[in-house]
Image 1 (cartoon, rainbow, N blue to C red):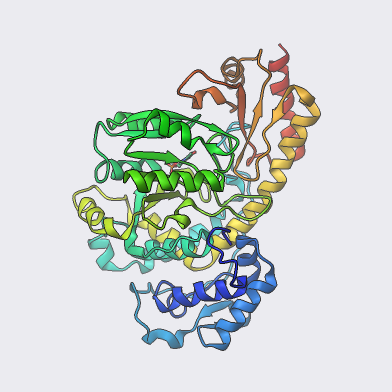
Image 2 (tube, protein in one colour):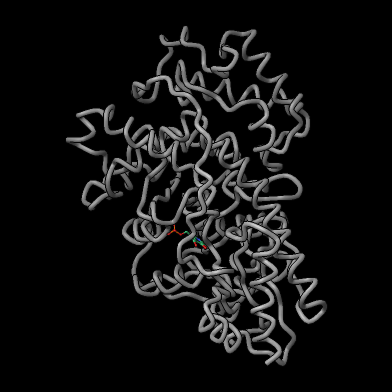
Length: 469
Ligand SMILES: Cc1ncc(COP(=O)(O)O)c(C=O)c1O
């Protein structure tokens, strides 16, 4: 459970019980809806199974949940008289199929960063959901899609964020967008204006930087160190900036987490200046040691944080589905804005992701992927250590889906990455993420699609030949 959203004086099981009870009474979890298994939820929140068990037992004994053996635990259908925030889609009972294990990486290059393990994507479940969605999607939604996004998906996201990221929000605050850039575009058409100045992490996610610049924003690079964004430097360089773009859970690309002291300093600056913080929580789901880090948004008492998340890392980038959570005070402005917009794309993938979440597949998929990535990360790190030894320094990272390895000063990461790409390897140069003179040379390497230690060793050997030539 996110640490910042934990209340030290209340036992964890009680906090979890309260979150579920609140979600049920507020109608965010609806009668009959399945909740994650004890095992999945304990793994998701990094708490002991006993903690979830106790919370669930209380919820069952008070009539909020019912357990039905193999059919899992569900919100009690008896609660159907409680007020709900949306109409429950009708669902048929389905059996749980195993993910398709066929290796379908096609032309994904070895080391390609930012791509999930496509061989482990549950294609069978997905194809079943696709047929189900087409059979069952409501005709009103087919005729008049909500420009803010498919309502059950927004509900599922609000519930997921409440439980897994400590973010209390309603579905009305959630907007589905076409990728992260869709969320940025929506922000540029609402709270930001061309000419506005913003802080941007350096090194930082360059597609986001280019996009904001194209939209007319003036970006001030703010350096990142081992505690994340240097807030004090931001205040010196651009004290009156209107916004700051940050990746607090897992800085892109260095992987460091924004320290609590810096989080509080950033929020204090935003509160004082009435500035916006754009939190990009792109791959926080993947963490292999310790507790999942809380979202910065969970500390946002003054409502200065505009939170974004994406399905690109947890499902696949081709879905082009991301989301934005706005403060309640801006809800109306955003609903009005999206009314004049092309919208978040087809409702079909949105409805499929909603069903994937509501039927418990999402929590299961995340748990499986975390376990798989911990193993695959090990393949790559072991291969790098055994083949490169001390000539590469691997940045310790508790999460994410790529490894950052620093080169020594004499080696140019751009030259090496260009040669590697010409040789069919997907490594990327760290300096590409830099808007100023790069301070360090490094290589970013994806590990998610290395299915064995042999594959990782073979790819690292090919890379080592380039490095030594
Ligand atoms: C830092 C960062 N933010 C956001 C995204 C998500 O982008 P999208 O939702 O457009 O796929 C990515 C994807 O690579 C990323 O690396």
